Length: 248
Image (cartoon, rainbow, N blue to C red):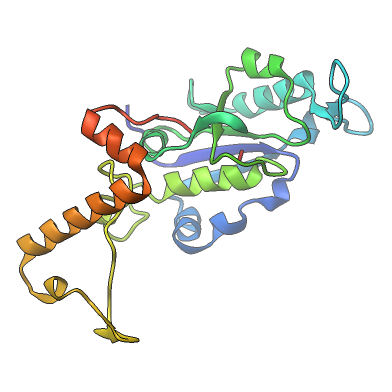
């Protein structure tokens, strides 16, 4: 099912003041201001029950750092979902470096839905029981670790928002980008014709659209073979790339 606007992202975080941040600028910011999508940043600490608004505790079994408590985070998720007109069964994501990688196919799927609820982890992580009890899907933006899931959540949201109807000036802009057809994008050029002794490839100024299209396809294939042999192998074997996703 494809949902019409507004596509809504709900973010659970210990630092709601980080939002919208970059999401309030450029295409995403203009679309947010015009109501093409909506953003809700909720403070996990609002669901704490003690006077210190505690959200974490020491790891069971010992070890460094702190872990987000299952009861507090579950209450925050339930409060975010118990809102009038909230779509049922929307994706519940946890930004985590151990999650499945974010891919363009996953972004397309998320952009076509009602918008996700995204939990931003902190400290040493999140109590495994709340991940299971609230069916959180762990997603990752890369094989590295950040201090928290907020930046990763912004990456995921921005990738989705730019695909929403009306956000990009020309919808075709998203059809020839990297990963759109299982390939990296071909090289781009613009004026001036000459730059530090380098010229725009003659074929791109020939006016022959068929030759231009063939050149771009060949360049995209060559780049993909060289830089992302995994993508090239998957494309040529007919395999589907991983659908999922993002803390870094």
